[in-house]
Image (cartoon, rainbow, N blue to C red; front, side):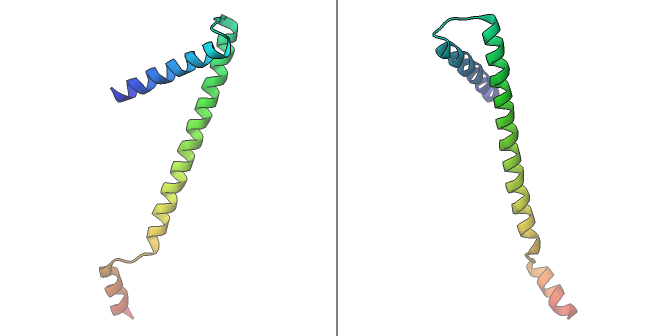
Length: 80
C-alpha cells in the first residue's frame, strides 16, 4: 500500500510540475515531451541512487573480510 502512495505522489508531482511550468495550460504535444524528459531524469536518478547504494554495500562487505573471528584467530595462532 505504501508503494501505491509513493507512485500516486510521483504522478501528482509530475502533473503539478507540468501545470505550474505551463501556467495551467494543457497541451498534448508539450505534455508528451515533458513526460518523456521527466521520466528519463527520474530513471537516471534511480539508477544513480542504486549504484551508490550498491557501491557502499560492496565496500562494507569487503572491509569485513580482513577481520578474523576469535575461533579463526586461535586456529591461526595454533598453526604457527
